[in-house]
Length: 325
Ligand code: UT7
Image 1 (spheres, helix red, strand yellow):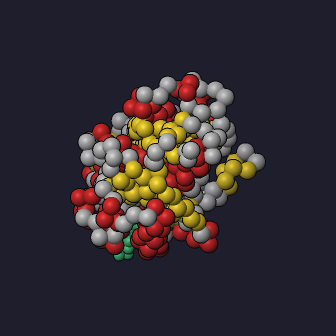
Image 2 (cartoon, helix red, strand yellow):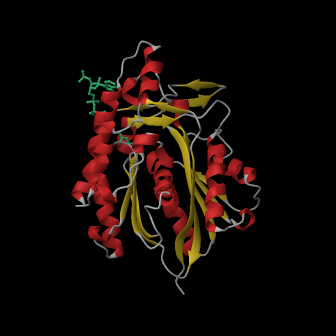
Image 3 (cartoon, rainbow, N blue to C red):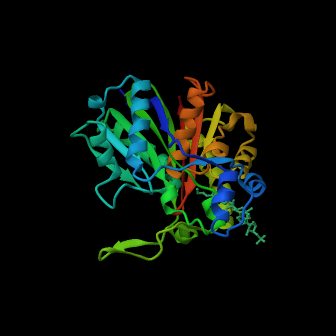
């Protein structure tokens, strides 16, 4: 019998400290950097983001999101047999944030690892979990996106620091005799690695290079709108479905204009697009599972709905997952 993989529970976590655009205007003004609520809203759709307090790590937000997802799925921690964390802001160089998370959840023995594909990380992680479940290696997986991007922002660079926020989203993915995940599609092109990067590294007890985020926003924007349409069409074709079959498009939450463009190309009305970028900003690998959980808890996304999840980001990476929820 074919083994399929289904999302059986979702969860998310946002640190309590919420900064509106007005708060960002004040924060940047103290550094002599000018921005405005009008510019941020008009160019990105972002109105607020959450920042974690000092001492709160990606594994903490992930643990919170995972507990909610396990509770929603009715899965006990000791039954989890795989943990994959997508993050670009890990707690440490090593061990993996997944290993730290595993211990925080009181689990031992199952395989755990991090996936580093920046804002496409959750799509990559879900694709890997799907494969490991389909081949019988795992039966109950936690797939998590968790980020503390506030730690890698340059608050003297108004072109990037107003865009990002912290948060986590998690799903439980279980083996099933019915699908579930219908098709996946992941890609990368490393020649564009310079347009979105944190070009620092640890060496000899010091940080070499610059450990803060750099982005050529326009270059990322142009690539993003093209590949998001391509990958959505690729998963639809693999699954033998049409764009009109999509009940909810849940794209990476980077910029409302990118989401509008993708929806337009797929001929989907915006009321079929889950939008949380206004409240969370861009939470990188966390943004898709966070948006999914918000939409599930708001009663928007319902069991049986067909969902198109898609991500794009540093690497350059992109991909999508089509699933029946
Ligand atoms: O998560 C991975 C995926 N990431 C993305 O998808 C991000 C993709 N890129 C974008 O979303 C957009 O390119 C941005 C939101 C980053 C920028 O929007 P834009 O419409 O491409 O603006 P721009 O970079 O062309 O800048 C326009 C102007 C510039 O001023 P001049 O040169 O025209 O005088 C900027 O200096 O806006 C200025 N500007 C700002 N003004 C006020 C840039 N940032 C700000 C700011 N506040 N925060």
